[in-house]
Length: 179
Image (cartoon, rainbow, N blue to C red):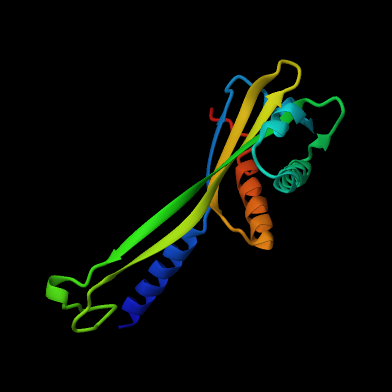
């Protein structure tokens, strides 16, 4: 019986953490020499176009600055890289039909003899954040990271989610060279 309990516990943890994770993807210019990029600045025209609140923009920019600084980069008036962002949200509506089964007889999670069934609706908002790194001297995009995850309306949870998303996206920068 113990292996079954352990399996149920592992599956429960996997389901809970998979619903809460941030999905990340990156792309980059294979010709760019990322070792020479030491300084950065925010690209105001690109950031101004992001259709999110000014509060969220500042939260994202603070998180990006913190992550790039932790990687040894310096914010500069004469940068090697310009940082731009783009963000979008999408509402997901999920409708679950809890069908009682054959002739209303139902075993399992709802063991009522006659059950007419019911529907439940849940709504989530998924956010996607793009971080673009542009070579300042050429204005060419050299690296792009994208992260997606469920957002919260609670301010503290939203701040944590933004920090997590930025951290996971920028964990992929600089890209590892494949020989």
